[in-house]
Length: 79
Image (cartoon, rainbow, N blue to C red; front, top):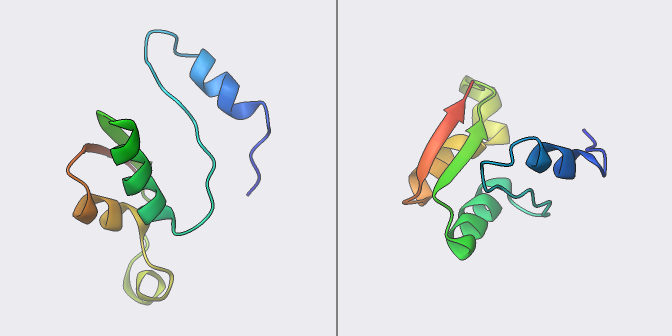
């Protein structure tokens, strides 16, 4: 999946009353989310959940359970 270069700016600008940022990083997604939230002093992590289960989750892993287990930040999981 590719993200339009204008999409992050559009997302942040559409909610001026909420201080938010969009960052694109490479690496292990869960680890990057946890580390970036800690470095930036995030109040809340909003993350999606695909609902993988069974063998698919075992082989592909799952980002939201990793983040939940490895952060002390508040988390909102969207299904």
